[in-house]
Length: 411
Image (cartoon, rainbow, N blue to C red; front, side):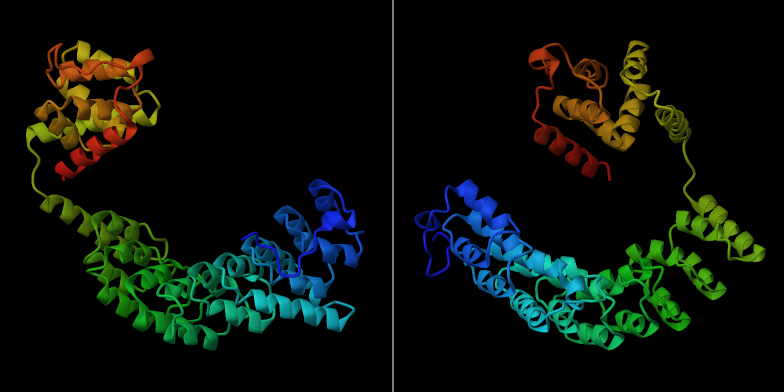
């Protein structure tokens, strides 16, 4: 099916020239309404697209174009009309303004999601948008349509938002509501009581949301099994001493340290938090001498990496010195994998995994040959050589898979 509307008349028969000349006519603001009407029925989609985007196209013709069977044409028209919304209230001709609104409302219930989504994207933050259009888009079942409007439209009231939470058009709509700037305490309470974990995390991450003290306390009580809430809770703009006390009892040590650095805490609270961090560290299992050596080695190499001084030469120098531990540590720091993962590849004498580690570290096949020999203890017959021009002989997917297996085995 060509996408042309019924009643098509072939423009070339009317002497309108080639397709390129018809496109120019369709896009010109000087073309008469009669010619534009002919071009709106053109068999070439490029010509009809030019007419759909023409800002001088009369409203009655836009209405006809909204029935085009090609959703790309309807999408172009929808974007043009939606962008006109701020100017419509100042239109000199009320009838023309009404026709544009009617066409836009019809496109807002178009069968194609992309047509509705482009309208939502254009009007999402417009205070001049028709309220009925905003409500229609907010209740759309496609997330790409309802999300931008629900997050950003200034026309939605608390009552509108509570209605969306009560009968959500999409399962993720509560998260969209939770991300609204300046969210009221009333709506925040409804999310805290009825929404899912993802929406509550979005609410806690929204620093402009007004969350009542009692509501925040209740969420803190429920937060233990939801580690993804812990960071947003610790970073809330306002926390009472009771909230800080409760959070410090279960969040991870680094988050307790974040709590201790808050400017709104009194010195006694900061002292207590730092005492708790120290207590947690002292309760940890004592490190063996080998663990201490590895920690010191990794720490020194991380400092080198931070100074952009950790490179393949560092790796090769360690290999020449016969320092297998340093070779493994260089690979771990440069690749971002755990030292245990590198050890696993060496223990298995897995040439492919070792090559993957070198690739991930950003080194070359020269380094990979050294690592296979030094860490993998592989003989000449077992080494995997470079491909043509020194490229890695394994596909990227293969090397990534090898690294994923290593990472899992090191957990």
